[in-house]
Image (cartoon, rainbow, N blue to C red; front, side, top):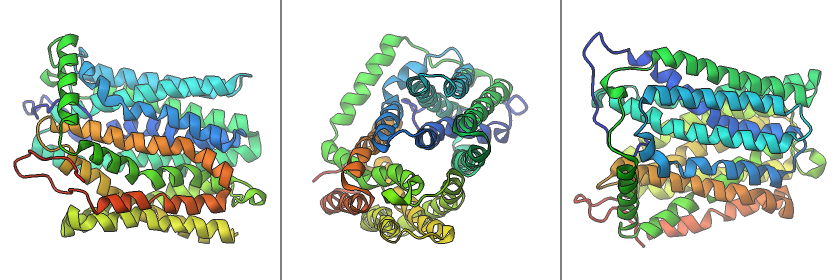
Length: 439
């Protein structure tokens, strides 16, 4: 969760509230669509438009900083007159910006316009996450929050399946018949239209009532709360080592998840696999997404069985060792789509399995104690920052090394977090006093 206050779980009187299934699935679908549009779909669009890998990584990485720092303006969103209307406004703004990306692709200065509009999408989407999570917490009881948590993850990932498994495949097919600009114009118009439609639906579907009122207070009080949250976060013993661990956890992943899809697209003459846009969409958006979800579930059960301290080494290995499949793919350059897709399935399963480690470390160790929700938001902000930082440099490293040596470098990038994990405190004290990692 990303709200800065632990909101009370209030349940309205029977008959006066909307059933959670009327809005929880669509709310988290609307949360995922703009995120994946910026994080994944935009990169594939820029690749089709001929933008070099380093520029794609620089700009999409910089835009992704919105999700890294969203906790900093979270308290001020609590002052919105209506959380429901704030969510709708952010969805409509994000949808309009995505639609304008479609129009910008037809203009001479399309690149600068697209980057600016995608930045608007990122700011609207990251702000939307905060208020949407607040609506979820405020309108569902503790039991209901647990019961419908599966719908959160399922429909957030459904947005990934729709974006990569559906729209990316559509873009690839349209490119063959209409040309690159027209194909991606249609894709971003569809993305924008879908988000606007969800916004209009949520105008009626989201719960109303006492829970939709502002939290109260003034901007000055929100600023004071933010200062206290940040001060107490950085006062945790060992917090800087914990932050370093979180950032390094994503060193290899941030690079492989950014460059991997571009490697699949690049021509075989330059070391890539020469897949079409549609083939990449199938490999990553269908099989890859399914493997990631299966790995996430398996990783959760595995960690529950062993405990975080004993499981962490295996989780780090799981998220990094399968990256060796890219070394294989870059060395052999297989022509079989089935072989490539199978290899990516292995890599994505390991990614999902191991990624549980950093999430639980933030939730159970870093965020324990006072301001748990707020400190979890800050912890996940550093997690996103780690991804973005390594994403932004990945294009430069890949162009300097070439694909084969780059993937060897990615494997080496996992060594620092492996070493650091052996010296980390991976359990929160029962008293909540020492609740960050320490060397």
